[in-house]
Length: 167
Image 1 (cartoon, rainbow, N blue to C red):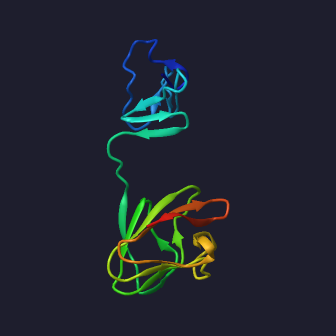
Image 2 (image 1 turned 180 degrees about the vertical axis):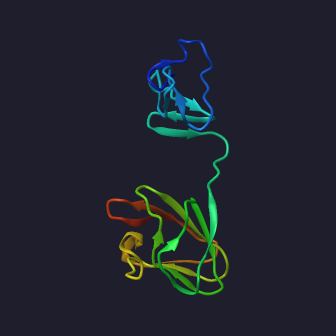
Image 3 (image 1 turned 90 degrees about the vertical axis):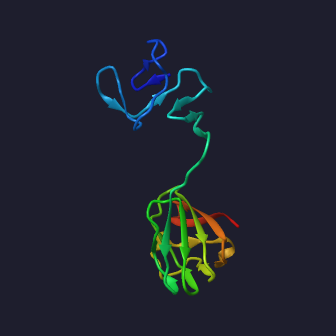
């Protein structure tokens, strides 16, 4: 394994596990944030996460950040969801989401409906900013009932949220 500017820790006969804040110091004392594997296809293990061939292999539990977002009755425009992965929402009346703020290219989120009232995701609704709108399958609105969810992915090319899956 190499850390930073070609420092081969195996050659130096030191422990190859690296933990911390994903920042490393090279032999010149300069902090760097890159790791290169010496043997192709073996990957690099960093704090229990295997980085391998352009992907990440996780062991154990995968914990996703979550938050509950309050929705008002009727249309909710440019809903602020923060930087979490799972967004739960519950309302005391029927609600709709016309757009979601916080879209960043390739961001993935799960919207999870809890409670008794339905929430409708509105396709390309003009009440939200263009970059916050939902580009839904069949150009049709999607209604989420109790305990239903939908996975969304932000498409930076079209600057819209797209559906990845639902259930």
